[in-house]
Length: 119
Image (cartoon, rainbow, N blue to C red; front, side, top):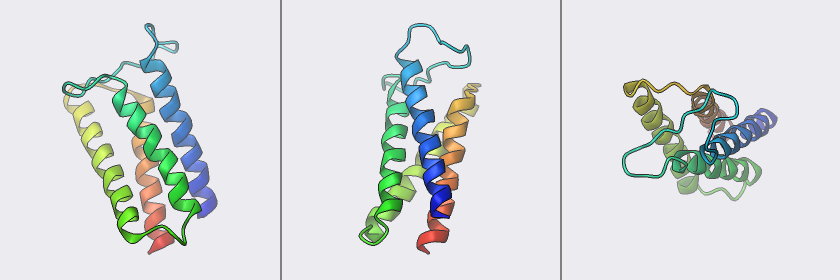
């Protein structure tokens, strides 16, 4: 399971990095991206926070022995809250970004694996 978690983490890092890259471009290189603007935040913030979350997930799975229970719960909560909020926000605003929804799915899968791995 841990190997799958590392693969999903790498996929999430690449996906979030791509979203961050495309949010900085004046024209979308693939034609499938549109920056989501959440309230007053700059449009690159969701991708940046996703990149940080996936980088932190690599640490969570790599340091299983010293990962504190509170730290694990904060990581899980932030992942579920972020994916739920952004997914709902995107659906309510008729915003469809396949790369964004891929990141949400990868995050939820990683949280599910952490439940199996850490109990």
